[in-house]
Image (cartoon, rainbow, N blue to C red):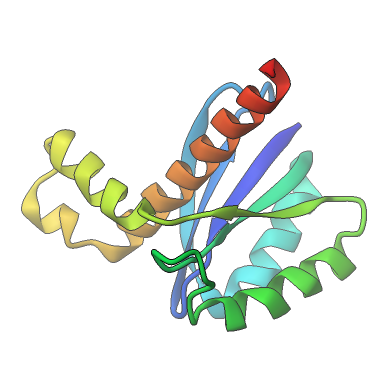
Length: 141
């Protein structure tokens, strides 16, 4: 079963997913946030999804950022609509910075680096990879 990751944004939302064995995280797509709920419900109806990880935006102090006011109602709706699928929050601090750094290091051209949808998708992948690494550490300890 796959794990789906969401980097929730005001206008656009990046999504990433694991392979069925949950070994590799990869970008899935970017959707308009207003179409996100329908997209997730359709995706879960066609793919076996074990859980959904939603980026938890925090400030450097650890306090929730202003986007949490939009994320919390979305997460609550998902939990009601998909009661058999756990929905977890995972700290997303620095994911945009890491996404831009990843794009620079991969040699992606300047024009592509300005593609905010690509940044959102890469951010969702970084959130998912971070969650997978944290899970691995919990299992090992």
